[in-house]
Image 1 (spheres, rainbow, N blue to C red):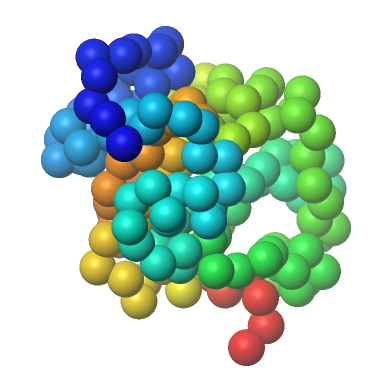
Image 2 (image 1 turned 180 degrees about the horizontal axis):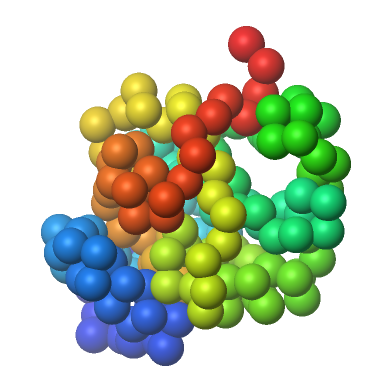
Length: 164
């Protein structure tokens, strides 16, 4: 991991959104990696943390409307379970839907910095951790945050994403 002065428009949008929301520690904590960390396991390895501490940003569709699910890297979202909780049918979004909804590409989707608000679900399993790491708009970036801050920043709905 390095801290180059590298920049990217999507990362700068994320940084601006974090600052605007009062999450300046998160904005100043954006870290750049030498290589892409497009999986929770790769990000956890690069950071030296458990995979559960990675907040995967996954875009699904709920009855054809994009929904962002911030889930622990230790979980695989149960789409049937989540669909029942949200009152609709949940399916994986195409890369085009992800880009249109978030302005970011798969592998680097951040919880914030989108062109317009995206309905968000935040995995309650993330509440068990003091610090979680989320993508910052590019596949080589992450920022530190907390469960409570993710809920506040996104206006997200706390929910389990798998049955107990």
